Image (tube, rainbow, N blue to C red; front, side, top):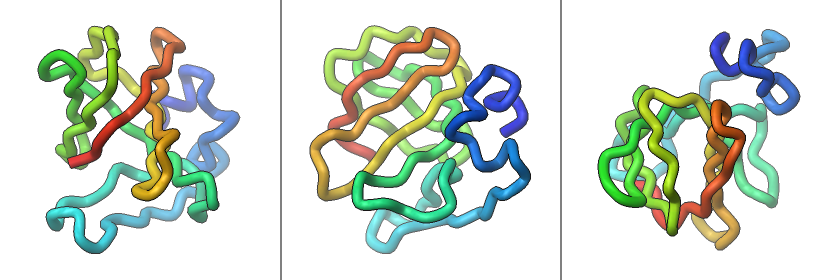
Length: 112
């Protein structure tokens, strides 16, 4: 959390203001915890999560904390323990991941 705050992601990071509420897990997602939420309550536009990702293969990244795999679409980021923000909504099609260090974003196809 503090790393994201230090990198200037504080404008969306409620944890920086000390208001973080740890909410883990969504039913039916293989029993693994979700990454830590950035905002306190989910909105109609999806929930944003703090992630630290490492690239496993082409268009495949893994969150360090939750061990969840994030499948992207045409993403060329060479992330190694890179902090970022994942916007995820299981119904919507406009899911994305923002890489804080490179300040780029990619579309997300699946979260496993």
